[in-house]
Image (cartoon, rainbow over all chains, first blue to last red; front, top):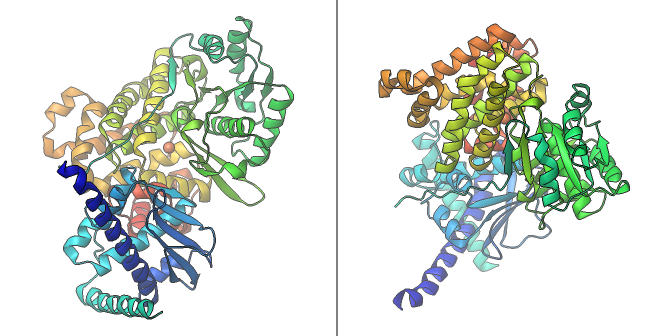
Length: 181
Length: 395
Ligand SMILES: [Fe+2]
């Protein structure tokens, strides 16, 4: 009985958490593309106007970013202005929760059939690298090691601290701007 | 509790062994198919491989209504459309693909068009677009390596746009794969070697990459055992029907393994090398396999060590200390490559191929990094890592 009554609450909490993490990641993606040259080297190869989506199937929380040129990403929130070019879809909210709460690495989630790629696979591989870079930047090292397959060896502490501070700052201003808008 | 989760799916009926082709009429009838079309290539026809297939059907009063024998090595959307036209004109109701990877992929794509309708195959590109089962579809592989008879993907190039279209759906899986030793008996030595090493790589990567799972593992180890045991035997005695059947079964088993657990960096590098330097796929696999295993070594020590049992047999396995088994597995693969080099000069390094320039390595590395299979490699690969592996494989 108790389990039955608790289930909707857990599910609701997970949904809110996944939605919130998507917002943080979306803003962080935009921020990291503004401050990190290595990220821009990856994103520059995306076509201009390229729309990338992460979504929970069937109609769950979503995150949409656009490549606006020169490697810069723009966070669109949870709805796309036109059909997306590349979509990474979690099969279930639980799977998104596992990944976004860093209990399951993105690469493991792919390997475990937790998500589907709809679109050009080589671009999905590229976006996975960007997400890995993002996660190793904004998370404490211990958590990041769990989230990505290998923590980049050349990500030295000062660089990480410096950049992380700027990304956090960027995320914060972006959040404030949204609240005001 | 572990987060480990996996999926395994293979609904293909495997019909294997002596006189397997003669089962085709019965199996077709079981699916209410009466007017099959054969999709194949000129090489298969010239080698006389269609004759036993046609004879097997005619003896049972089943007429092959149409034969398309002009599938190119890199099949295209135009070819698919042309074949679909013939299929409709001749009122066929089923497809038998006879050949290697290209003929099989073409058969899958034609099946989409004739089942779903229309002339534009590009419309169905992507994952999970198909929602209904397709027409009865049989595959008779004539090489022992690709494993395409048990995979749910097809790649067709769109010549006008210059892109490769991927199709992925479980409905692309054939109803049956017919493995008959007669079909691979005449394969020339270097193709026998290269395709068998492709199967070996499928099994090894399936067993050591991130999506490995207990069911795939069973198929992978069995495939490795068969290739290790029979490949050199067949190289020395090409008409060895039993050995040929072993290799063909190994290829199918390795195909079942990797289609459920994916492949890794050997394939990323191989796909890039194939695209840039136009080297055959199997050759690239044989070439890169030991170097990638060395690169991955510390992430795969345990599973790679286990493979020694299947590569070298129980005596060598038990005589090798557990801590040395992973290295011994790599040595066993190198030994096999040396033996193949002696028999048919299958290149072991990029330099030995004579078709790759040292200046192309950077382009190969960059392209490999964007290949889908790299996601399943057990170790993260940076551009510098890929370059290092390529430099080791150079000479
Ligand atoms: Fe392969």
